[in-house]
Image 1 (cartoon, rainbow, N blue to C red):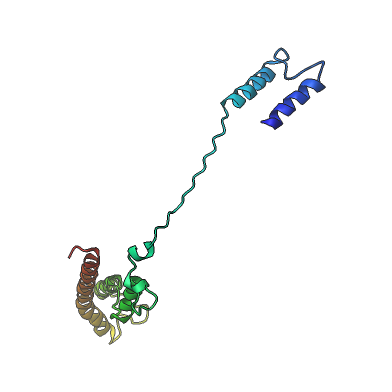
Image 2 (image 1 turned 60 degrees about the vertical axis):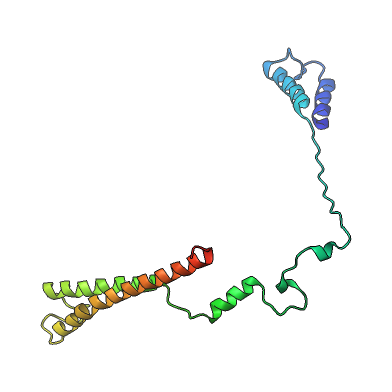
Length: 174
């Protein structure tokens, strides 16, 4: 604000013939002068100082509960370390989405084999429909692919349900 007032007084003193801060000189200069005055009146400086002091009572260390794992002579692991150790020691299963993805790919391959056999298209551009191995290869893909896909889908549902039950147990619902 001091800078603004000093600049206003500078212009007021330096320009005696055409004063841009004079209200009669132009509309915009009068508006600027009024705006500067209103701004200085509205501006209020509020200082807020917050201090916190903790009072120590005699024997306060004895009253605060300290977990058993946090004591200096304790061999007990903290809760997060126990959970990590349990994760490392538990059987690492394949996630359910891997089973589900394998099921989808197997089902697509099996159905595609049926369509290739019906339309007499070459298998992967390698086996023509005149080949001796054409029907056995496509038959193998079709007859083993559909049950394999069903098994993989069933396995993905089992793993997903097991993961959901573990999460419910951790959340306290079971």
